[in-house]
Image 1 (cartoon, rainbow, N blue to C red):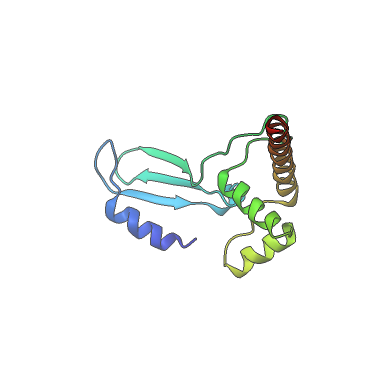
Image 2 (tube, rainbow, N blue to C red):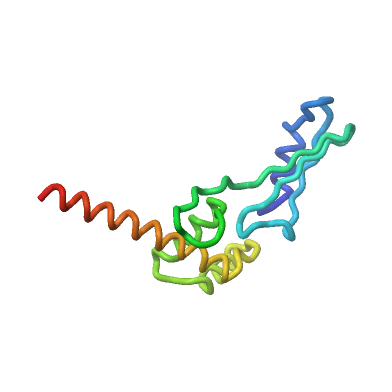
Length: 134
């Protein structure tokens, strides 16, 4: 993610909601959550400050392990799993795309366990529906 492009956009259009001054934009790679960033906006004149995540949280599947995942991380893990690959391929892909390294392996595994739980629920519901049609 090239901050210079985003900085140019926010420099051009972003104004402080309190004093209408220029707003500075930044993000920090140390504070990222997998592929989700914490975007920080600061007013250059007053003390207004606001932080946002670059991705919404996804819904947690009932009974799945771990905590809620950010949507971008869930979708990336899902895409990698759908092509039959794992965390190492995700890391390689991120490197080739000039992206920071993605989520850690244990987070990737937690997301996979949540996906398995969701797949299981959908499969069971589908089987029950098919049985009703017979």
